[in-house]
Length: 82
Image 1: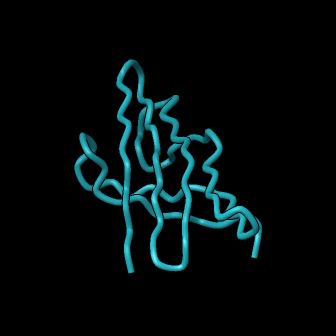
Image 2: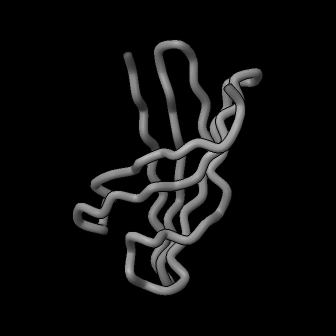
Image 3: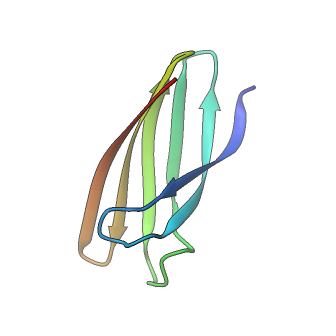
């Protein structure tokens, strides 16, 4: 269904083993995932944010996300296959 969902991003590069729960919108009509900019509660630094976009099919999902903490920005791409 289309609506707000939770995505877990674990083992963030540069952030040891933090797991981040983010709100995301999954649109099944156009096969997209949108992670609006939001605070990261798991990283105890004020102003830490995450945002991203992605696409999916029945067998794959690709998510690009960006984490910003103070002056540090980490951009990653995650590919999942079934």
